[in-house]
Image 1 (spheres, rainbow, N blue to C red):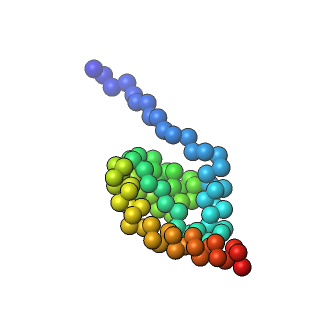
Image 2 (cartoon, rainbow, N blue to C red):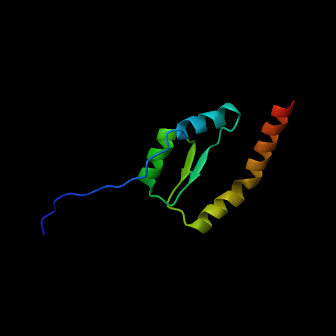
Length: 88
């Protein structure tokens, strides 16, 4: 066969995704991370389009859990500081 071309499919980024990331940064959450099973190129496109600070790609479900377990203490500490600041 003769190569005729290709079709590329991709997920559509929600219209309010960039706004949501910006609002998180405005309240002091500066580390915004996406964990995905997607390949690197589409994951990086989403990161760039939304303003996320990091992306972990090509992950299996157990890999996502491992990343969350590693960073969960830092996340909980940051949320507590933000909540305390908001209540003052």
